[in-house]
Image (tube, rainbow, N blue to C red; front, side):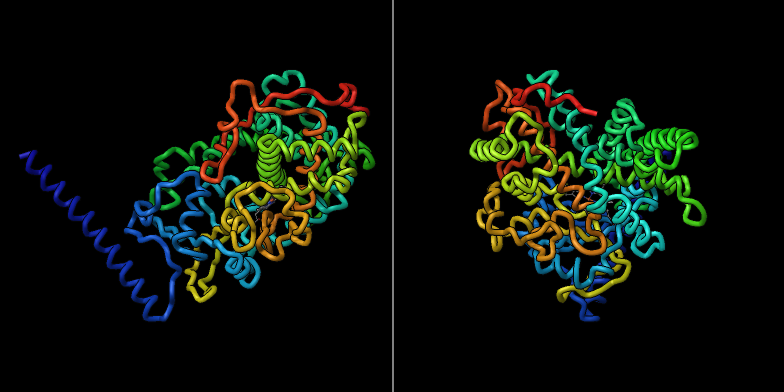
Length: 512
Ligand code: HEM
């Protein structure tokens, strides 16, 4: 009897499931015929089933940038993919990038809110995930641009970058037999961001906790979360991703709140002159009246600066060192330029950078081939609209495929080759991205607000790292194992190198 009841139950479950799938197919067919009847043309893309969407039809290509390149090859400059509740549009040509980021910028300057983004963006209080329709969006961007990362501000904080680079090098030279460049540079980027926020009032322990939890957050954010694709499943958190994000957020909140409290206490004992030079937080804490920042806004500002600044800086510096070490002729030319302009008797200064065009070209080329992520941060449109003859449904996630655009053979000769010299003929192509072949910082309303700070930091960090240490592939590692190829990009694992000090040790002492 029990057995029979089980069979009946299974029968009903199977029938319900089939009914659901059938219903979804009918719904999809109906929606497609509606689009057709209204004369709306959707961008091409892989075939998709209900529920699992296009996942079974995607080529099995890793990593993500190669998958995007492959899909662009097949479906062209604009492609649409559907998985679960999410519609994603991938933009892979200069022409289309201009349409989305310039012609229709305002419509597409929102951010989607996948679960990881809600934590990374501090639940929409953080600039990088705030909707551009929020009343806080423009004032927050303005504050970023003028008070935090303006070229004038960047110029006044050169001493901080110098000090932090020296601190990193002093740690590195303790053991040059095996240097984990990725970790060293991550800590450097975190220290720079902490200094920007708190002046010198944080310690190595704060850096360590934040770097560790930050790495954890990046790993969690990179996973495909089933709850994003099927929001009804969010409360079950089947992969435990949201629980992990909550834990990391709690750690961040605790560390940042403690640093803010420490700053408040110090400020109660300082004169206004002393407050001036101690980071953004003291400045924001001094704001009185209606513009006073709430505790949550303060935490979000710190968090945005730590999150947005650290990963990008550490990726670009690490990749640039990897490229230089992979190409001995480029390495030699960089050293020759540094030796001619600076020598080994004094430390390279940020003001030397304008006299180091080859180093500048290395960074431009690194940003072309190794932008911190293969796409811009995701954009989103609240309203449906037509772009380039295609209908883009409301609430689509828009990914601008930097990887393909910045390697487009129609514009870049030998696009896969790391060639800093190409920039001698392309000096008119600016970081600001106005002609859309080169948009490592994006363009328009959501463009990175820290272009000057970002480029200054990575150029100076590369110059100091090359001037002070002669780097080489670790003994025992084959050259072929070290070098990345277009088919096999460098795996996202730590960059380990050996080195020899090439300046007099006294240069690494910090003069105060
Ligand atoms: C070389 C280093 C850097 C690169 C290549 C870079 C690149 C980018 C890119 C591609 C975006 C997304 C643009 C879009 O979605 O359209 C972005 C956004 C952003 N970046 Fe940067 N960035 C760098 C350094 C920094 C630094 C040092 C900071 C802060 C101190 C920063 C703060 C931000 C913020 C706050 C956003 C979000 C802006 C918004 O959503 O309105 N970036 N960055």
